[in-house]
Image (cartoon, rainbow, N blue to C red; front, top):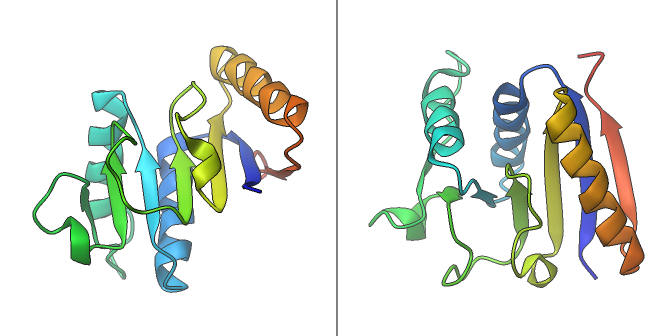
Length: 140
């Protein structure tokens, strides 16, 4: 069963996602990032290039010719993606087919609209028997 992790209360959701992706890359854990809104995907892509001057997090769009050899992929669809280990959700919806992934990482900011959508997703997961683990980012 998919493990569900909620990283909530992030002052800057994109920066928090970059930090988590950097940690995953350091541990050699590939990650697929579901970002169906182009503004979110573009912000993440840009920040991954500039997030830390001391390290580089290799990433690209899932439709790139380099996707097969890149550990962090950003996508707006999950239909034809072969990766099924770790999925990071940067949308406000339940990712389609999330249950095929071993882990689902939800990153939630502090805005009320985002928090409300996250509460609905938590309810959805719990109603279907998924255990949800929480990590508070508001103090970071």
